[in-house]
Length: 459
Image 1 (spheres, rainbow, N blue to C red):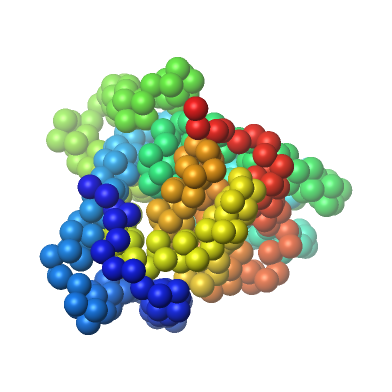
Image 2 (cartoon, rainbow, N blue to C red):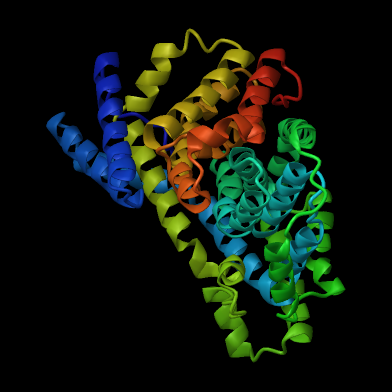
């Protein structure tokens, strides 16, 4: 099935107008009414269907466009379900709690901002969720910074930088899985390829936070210590809890397909869970489907640890299918092909294609405020252009993360921006200058695209 087959060819003005209306409907619903993106997407689909009927396009044709678009995301859906399974199994085996506990052990008042950045990065990679990292360990660090009279803006910038490093590089992250599967790139190849921009951005950010950290000799780390003590009391912290992660890393290095790697790691984690908790089979299966529920009595820690399960992925799965269905309809109506055709003359080399795709992802983040849609729409729109200039799809998946995932928290009215502000009580415009990692990634991505360095070409 071909998502990119057009039935109708609109004029450039018509395509621009339809795109503008669609973006307005999406952004108005998401930003103004804070609606889940599913409803605005359905509104746009209904609008496009009626427009197609007005243009005498058979409904059957548009329906096929919707179905073909959604079918393009089946690979992503299956992988996301395996990720939900992995997270649930890693919780009951103690793998995620042990990783988080290790992060807390690094807490110190020396080089405060740098330590905040490193710990939030480690926790973010461990749990695969930037917003959960911000809402839990991030809030604890903000309260510490306030207590010892350090900059709230710099602390928030370090938290956001670390959390979104984790969101970008974790195999547990839905955006990481989405970016790789939408352009048909193996998950672990995608993560390794992101290292070309992510590692320099991480190191430069770390140097910055080391440089700006004040010479604080002592600080009240009781919040962090309480986190750590509560975590240890769960009985989930064990040396062998590292084994599922080690297995996952080994299999990824050996280029084992992502689904098989996730399945093997989940199976090992389930075996270890019997050593940890001796759960009855029924309870174990319930955790794998509904996720792990933490009941430590520490509200913030319970929020951090209550996660995983196949059902936890249903929100993202339904969003992926709806967004791709909308994308299929946009292609069937000829809107996206007409827009790309109108600028095709400008996209005649590697640098221009990468810059255009990055700016599109950034623009969608700004206009819609939703990172999922920025990743999905940019990925679907630019695959043919990357192939045209001889670039492998993993270059595009890297751009989707560099300019899609990590840019969202820099937009004040975005989903991430609004959430982070409410959690940390630091305005987006205050922490933007210090969220170094988030704006270094798109800059490095564009610079490497222009220079031609670190790129992979089709054979």
